[in-house]
Length: 400
Image (cartoon, rainbow, N blue to C red; front, side):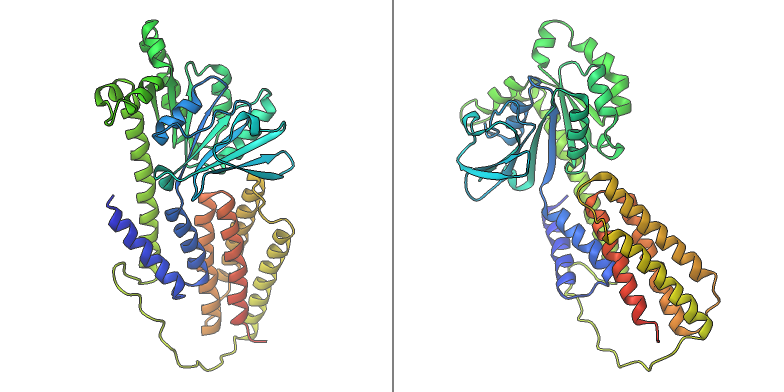
């Protein structure tokens, strides 16, 4: 994908949002898409201790940037204007240390370290190393947390045994479709004469549970990157790094294309053309006040009560990063929109006020159904925003 094209569509979307050209439902989706286009790809590197996660992270980052902090469940590598690390404890308390974090900086109970570096690769990619803890319950909790914050996952293992397969099988299908199995220490397996048989044995598992498998000799790949002023391309290719990086690039590009396609669809829906200056909203003459018929008003009041009840219920427990909570919000919003559309469709309201009221409901229903398919905390927040805006817009059309 041409970067200039992505920049153009991003600029057009930003301009439409700033000019207020999108209605509330479209604005919520537009702001989410703009965040996605401006957010680095979030890549999780997962595995048990000693599986080669840190080395793989450094290879992908192009330099020895990821601190080796064995025992910390989550270590992130992100772009920052200054070199520092944020260390987070179990109770959510944080402290900052300058430079690269070392084991001496990590107190007992540390659950997360976010290392900031001024490195150009990190402008487009955010790496997160996930070290699986000892207990099954803690492992599953950590993977659930990771799945909500990851675009692409790379599982590191030299075996991928039954224990690992059981853990990965619980990961959402969305992430499996964006998941790679990195068969680490491929050079050792090759020397032992077991690499080919290991790949063949894992083929059925990979076909069902992953996007692709890549054998990787990480030490050779890092040596290829460090070979003088230029990379040793033959060693880079032989290590398996070239294939893995290409697979990663292709998936990131595919995801970015999908985001851009969604932006195109959103702008086309509201007649906004990328590359052209967005037209200012026309100033419409005040419309005369029209009162809906008495039967229509009763149905409209019933519809607003339905929206109010849903909003009050959800506002008592808004999305808080918990996957079940986000799903609950999405399901409740989408179901309410479906019930609302069914109620209004069954009413023979011919007056223009009721038709406009019903059009708002139908548009909101379509948006909420799309958000329900996307899942996740951000989609849940957008769904709640759409629901509240639906209630506001529809209330304005009800004449008391």
